[in-house]
Length: 339
Image (cartoon, rainbow, N blue to C red; front, top):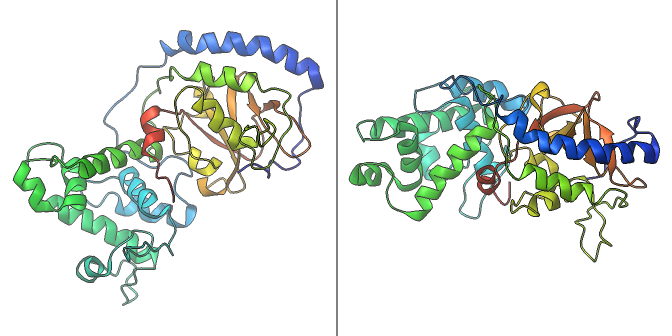
């Protein structure tokens, strides 16, 4: 995603702001590690409710309600499954004939689909049925493996992937690479859908990502630009953030609304340099994100704004400010390649 930053009023005053910004960025980047020591104390173990807008508004209440169906799941975990399976697309269909937002294959739907909205029809294409069915199926699997040692949610996810018999046989997550990766992926994605209950640690790659973006200041914007020679070294908004984190070894998705899921979400007053900051046409829906920048502190970001502009410093406080993501290596690796 790149174009769409729109015609918001820009407050940065030409080259003077860039010059001043270069100095404050370096101070703030150093400050990432100084401030970090004061941000690591928090409360653990709270219910994992959904982060702001992480689930499209049309499905948020369903995920919040049915994500509390049994102790083995929570709203953030259920959201992570749905995102991994379909990207919240109720019309998704895979080559293996998996259908709908929860990607049930016909045989599993026939035995485990429920009429979630009570209209007398079990419709795999209707999220009002499919989301409750996904939660119900998870909880049923959890009941099958409830006596297996280990984490009940991990064992439930393993049963979803490999079958309950394998989990029982191996007394936990079985030694299958696919299953182990599935469990790790979903539990990592869970953090990107959960509202944080404690202060979030900074990432060691943040300073490097800012340095990369800072070195691109003044580069003309290009819709779809990735900074390659073919693009003349130009970027759009998510092309810049992708390249900045690639420079420190983290691979992000190409578009902004998927980059939002690359880690947990600090609140506005907890932002640190290196956080990605997002802007959306619908403040209740991360899938409507249209712009992203790299926070540098002091209420400013480095971003590639729109056609005709250059990479520059811009203020983040505007009516369409959506939220932020503290990018993590595991969070980025867990993101599906296509959703």
